Each structure stands twice: as C-alpha cells, then as structure tokens.
Length: 446
Ligand SMILES: Nc1nc2c(c(=O)[nH]1)N(C=O)[C@@H](CNc1ccc(C(=O)N[C@@H](CCC(=O)O)C(=O)O)cc1)CN2
Ligand SMILES: Nc1nc2c(ncn2[C@@H]2O[C@H](COP(=O)(O)OP(=O)(O)OP(=O)(O)O)[C@@H](O)[C@H]2O)c(=O)[nH]1
Ligand SMILES: [Mg+2]
Image (cartoon, rainbow, N blue to C red; front, side, top):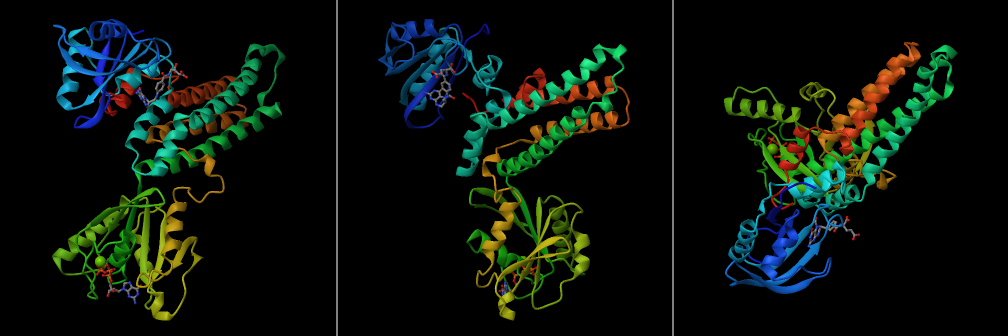
C-alpha cells in the first residue's frame, strides 16, 4: 500500500443535492474517527456529524468506510457524503487535509486502483471514457471495457501467444534433437490464426476509436452541387448559407452531430474550382486542407450535370470516399446506392430528404456500426491501436523468420516482443511515464 493518504472532492464543484469527499490511504480510519467520533462499520452507510478540530459542526452527512483491500482503490477508503455546496465541501476537504491527507492529483484514485490490481489499464481508461462519453452508445462501449470485454480479448491473444512460445522455445531447449521449426506444422498455423485475430482486433479497435473521438466527415466537391444544403439537412438546422450562386461558401463551417450515437464532426467547405477571386482561392485552399484531415470525404456532385472526375485527385489517397450524387429529384429518380470505381455512390436528394437515411447508414458503417456482430465493438484509444499495430508487425516478422527458416531464436524473440506489446495495452508492462500521461488526463477526484 502506498504510504500517503489522498483526498479530493469526488463530485463536481457547484451546487448539488449531495457532494462527496473521498479519501484513500492508511489514514482513512483515523480521519473518520477524528471527524465523526467513530469509524463506520465497513461498507454500511453511517449518519453522523462532521466536526472541525474544535468540535464545531461543519455538516451532517453519511460516511462510508471500505477497509483494504475491498475498496475502489484497494486501499482503505472513506467517503464523506455531505451537502452539495462548494464552501461546505471545501471545509470538509480542508479538515481531511489538516488530519494528514494530501490533495489527490487528477486520476490518482484510479491510478492506485490500477497499481493495486483492482483494474487493468484498459478498465482504468474506460472509467475516464465513461465519464467523458457524449452519447449513450459511447457510454455502452466504455461500459463494456469496464466490464472487461476488450481486456479479455487481449488476454486470450496473450494466452495463444504463450502456447506458441512454449512450442517454439521447446525446440530451443533441445538443440540436439535438431527439430526444424518450419517442419512443425502447428506452429505456422497457430501463428497465422493469431495474426488473423490481431487483424480483427485492429479493425474493431479502429471502430472503437472512431466512436470515442468522433468521425471527421468533410463535405467537398464542385460549387453549387448542394454541399451546404447537405450540411444543413444533416444538422437539422440552417447552419450554412445556401444560394444558387456558385461560390457561396468560403469559410469552413463545422458542426457536430450524432447519428444513432455515433459522434460526427461535419465540415462544409468551399466549392472546388479554379478562380481569380483571392477570397475564394483561400476558401478552396482550406477545403483541400480539411479533406486531408478527414476520416471520410463526402464527395458531392449534382445528378443533372457531369461529375468532374478530375476532382478525385483533390482528395487524399487512402481516405475513404463516399460519393454523393445529389439532386436526383431533378431527374425523378428515387434514392439508391451503387458501387462505382470501388466506392459507394449514394444517389439522393437533399431537397426532399430522399436518401439521407442511406447516407447515414453508410456513415455508421465507417465505424463498424452496421456489423453483423455488434458484441465485437468496444471503445479504444490511439494508444491501443498503436500497440496492436506493433504487435502485428512482430507477429509478421515471426512468420517471415519461420518461413525463411531463420532459426527458432529469431522467431522466439519476435513472439516475446509481440506478447510484451500486448501487455502494454492492459498495463501488464508499463512505464511510469506512460502511466503519468494516461492518468493526468483524468478529472480531479477520479
Ligand atoms: N459513492 C460512490 N459511488 C461510486 C463510486 C465510488 O467510489 N463511490 N465509484 C467509483 O469509481 C463508481 C463505482 N465503482 C466502484 C468500484 C469498486 C468498488 C469497491 O468497493 N470494490 C471492492 C468491493 C467489491 C464488492 O464488494 O463486490 C473490491 O473491488 O474489492 C466501489 C465502487 C461509481 N459510483
Ligand atoms: N433540386 C435540387 N436543388 C438542390 C438540392 N440540393 C441543393 N439544391 C440547390 O442547389 C443550390 C446550391 O446549393 P448549396 O447547398 O448552396 O451548394 P454548395 O455546394 O454549398 O455551393 P457552394 O457553397 O457555392 O460551393 C441551391 O439553390 C440549393 O437550393 C437538391 O437535392 N435538389
Ligand atoms: Mg456551400
């Protein structure tokens, strides 16, 4: 157990019905005794008066005592639940500091829970993500991580890797027997299966990251095709100016929406064309720049005129593009989608709303939300994706060494690195620096 005792307000500052001061560490019981005159029976709410050092009334409230190790942090924890006013709660907190606690850093309770094995790193991050979730979907996915859905998938992978490593290292232990790894059929197939699981996990984690951070969707295309009209339709408000004059939009216009819980950061841009107008030129430059930051570009063109295929080069290579053929009302078509040059093209009419649902479905697909197995989705961070990508590279290297008969040592080395990298995700292997960065982003009192 860590030596010192920490305290912080666990509820937001401001007026509220109830506010909670949380204390964790070896002094918790002594603080209860000093303020309440007794230590509450473990895990039972106790009503009492919180008093200052002269015995004067500060507040009356409920106290909860959770002796180690059965507490959130795994240490002795005391909660003082008082009335939710900023001054009264500050008085309670200051009294705790007087009695030997120190103010907790942001995330320090969760960090202690992690260090004491109450949560793995994915779960600790899930606590912060749950708090910061902006949609019910995000809450649900963070909750799945808290319940261990993502952690279990990592643990299963680690288990598979350990089995393969045992197999490979067995051949290292008996060099005389001259076993050629490449002739051990199960190693290659097990390795391929593990690599396939890492690939699947990368895809799922990528979707989870989109749900956590929102999908950046940039609406781009030639002038006057209905880009701003589309933004307005998706936002449900007349956020952008719409006219029939080409070149209406100059500035980037950003608007956050959500589609069935998927947060989307929409950006409307100036119509792409060559122009002598310096203001419009700057608008076009900004439109290109926005497209390069996009997760998805909605490439809009009008059904009643030719689509300028040369515009395709305006969009970054590798960025998913959804083609939007707008104004089909002018041709009396009904909404539909087709595949065109390997990309989805949605034919719709912003004017009458026909086909907007098809577009929304397509946007959700970018976050894996139309998948046949919704139980596969969970929340993820860049850190997780980064580690999964490095795991993939180590496993790929192991596979190559195996195929080229480079020797069991090299294969074993890559497998060990892969396992270690997976361990960074759950926090089995960490550095102080990494923990510092993760927990510093938590809110105070968490
Ligand atoms: N009042 C209050 N509400 C809260 C919290 C809190 O700390 N205090 N939480 C804080 O984030 C969340 C709940 N998370 C918690 C997680 C574990 C334990 C806990 O005492 N765990 C023990 C005992 C488990 C058991 O009895 O089954 C343990 O893990 O050993 C408490 C809260 C949300 N609500
Ligand atoms: N018939 C029809 N007209 C549309 C549709 N969508 C947009 N328009 C019209 O097309 C014109 C241009 O619309 P905007 O949304 O301003 O087009 P834009 O692509 O933002 O144009 P710039 O900002 O100039 O690049 C307006 O007169 C809209 O009313 C549609 O689905 N059908
Ligand atoms: Mg516009």
